[in-house]
Image (cartoon, rainbow, N blue to C red; front, side):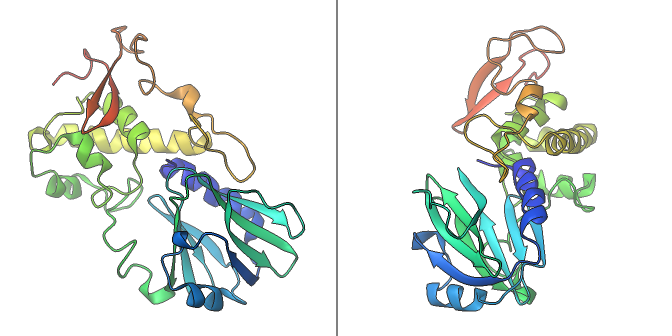
Length: 272
């Protein structure tokens, strides 16, 4: 699943390609992706111009004249800019046709992606954005904020993956963040010290900034709209490194499961 760095990479790529383009037609080839009334979705998008593309957590927000088109890529969603007469890929599910005879096509092999259309003043009212937590780059992502959320005995990995607490993190980056913070993924959140939490904040920002700079992580199928794979997979410290030596102490990295999620760690650096 594309996480914050991959979605940010897609956002930056799309901004170079589709800003100021005006939608003149919308073709919906698989309607379950659309979480707004279909007729209103088509009608309200007509003659809307893409003014900006923003991001919140793992969501892309296409800012139009009067609306926000909110898109979640889920497992394997991606966008591709094509000419009107280009052959349609069989995994294309939504097509936005522009006035310049180009099209922005949404492709999704798994068909898990979602799209919502919201009035601009109501973009954060109701689904899907209302309950999202802060992301590591937000000003409010502080020691005080995390202490207020780290009150129970849930494993720290579960909490970092909870989008209502921290938006944008997924399994790959949480494994990396916990390694940098030297925390075992099953550490109860109410056992964390202030320094532990500060280490999480720092590790989150360092990891995500580097991943964004390198265009995200490609392990299975992620590519940007330019069909370019990310490069952060070459910088991973523990994720996917089972049976390899820890880059810090040389201990063999192990793989376990935390709440069903594949979890990589160094048993020496990340003691429970």
